[in-house]
Image 1 (tube, rainbow, N blue to C red):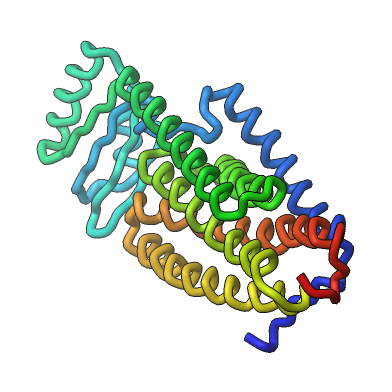
Image 2 (cartoon, rainbow, N blue to C red):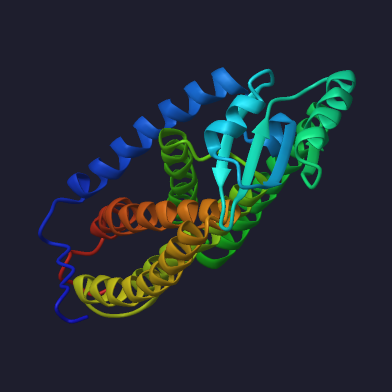
Length: 288
């Protein structure tokens, strides 16, 4: 890790903060547009929008399946291993659902059918909002208790918000829908973001020594932490991609995006903000 030197004097603090801040601004615009169009910050999947999921085990081709369900609102087909398919349909009324069940079982007697009503999807939306709200509130309380200084604490909280916002924007760009699985992944990102930011802030504010040495030490530790997590999740990503396990694939994709965002915000925006904060009273080469 000594090959990677984190030189805080190479860039002006405001320049360090500029790129992450610009990314956050663009991401916020994307999230707001998606919210206006769909009612959620990320395009909702079947868990939140409602609909019907059908699992098939068949020798039919994807084209034959599409032709069979041409009269219904087939939104996507995901191919699995050994001739398995996962189909998603839009919301239906009770009468349409009864007819749909009969139609499926007539052609595919062994099909698995799961329906999520629109009302239930709205309930899940409310619960997801509450989960995110309590997660952020809990994070904020812990951070303020730990540092008891307004600006460093607000910077850590903002980094967590920015991490989630940018990840949500990238999910929209790559077509990763919001589901119960991806919601859980977003909640996990709050923890990852807080870990690295608290590491940086604690080392700089609560330890003695030169500022550049403290920040470089924090960078080496944080980079190792994030790298090991990234490699483990990357392995899960490829395994789920090869095995075509949509749930694990979505979780891994969201976590990978979030970890990259966390690196950018922790060692760009947060590090720049801390330099400005320390620089008010202590020179970069001085002692805290």
